[in-house]
Length: 373
Ligand SMILES: *Cc1c(COP(=O)(O)O)cnc(C)c1O
Image (cartoon, rainbow, N blue to C red; front, side, top):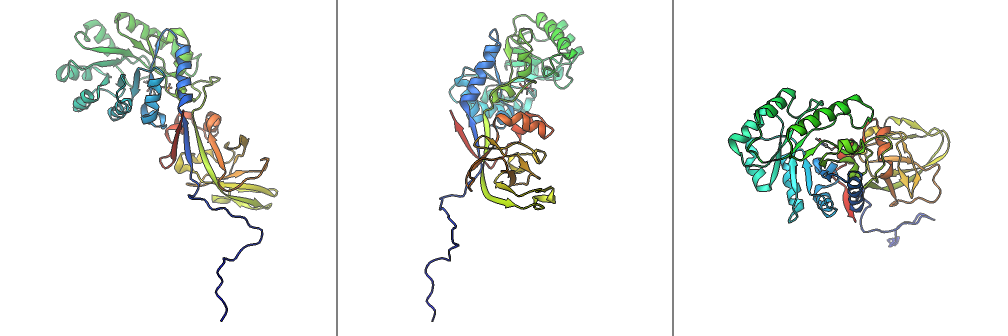
């Protein structure tokens, strides 16, 4: 009988390390950066109150953590798209005070939720104004006047009716607002037109707090800032307009699963869309389009390892991405973390043919989310 081997077969020279858990991608959100961006926006509009737009789960970053962080930085007004998001924001605020406005209109079916969560619906047409009078005349509200975007808000005819007929009398109107269509293009003629129209409305309704500017609108200067500003993107570090730079509060950290050496002629990934022209090192990392690194980020999209560029090679898969280690100085091991987004957020969005807003709100749900600050 041959004795049973009690030790495993060892491959000479191969070192392995035991870890408790497999390395998993994480999403790191720095709440200090969000607070600092809030204070910067407040400093850019010192005569106005800076509110915060936290719709879509605070641009994908987590309303539960982001809303209280903003409150700590002094924010007292929050804007969401849906009533359900408003309820989440109210829960996140817990004992802290704060007005929460719901952009998407007044719907009588939501009256109970609006009351219990203390939410303020934004009225978008005369029908909603009428329903508010009929069903909940005491409920605080805001009024959105459309001044040229033709998306939401009272149109020019309805606006005239409100101003000429004193249709807001007796209602608890907390704010009047409008939204800029082209604030990211400072020279666009529509900016001035919208400003003129909104100024006329504001002058006809003295005493009501007025708000017009989103992040890019704040950068258009004092004329656009009115009583309240409504930035979203800049709070999180996206560039609202060319040249603006706020610090990006979020990065993906994706672990290296394998390091490979490719020979000339070897392909990478689906479609064999990338072929090595010479011998190179690559790393396969555990993140993909399921995590929000859009397929369009492939082939050339920027990732970093210890700050050094390691561009994406070939196509982005659902769960995996290959990166190019050709120019990387140093050793790379499984479990090392490659960073995506961070300061590269806007450049990566550009590379993918989209905007930083879309990259943020598409961040995946399976990350281990880590909040710092
Ligand atoms: C989303 C939104 C904002 C915030 O816009 P940013 O460009 O992210 O600053 C402000 N106002 C309205 C009406 C919005 O829909």
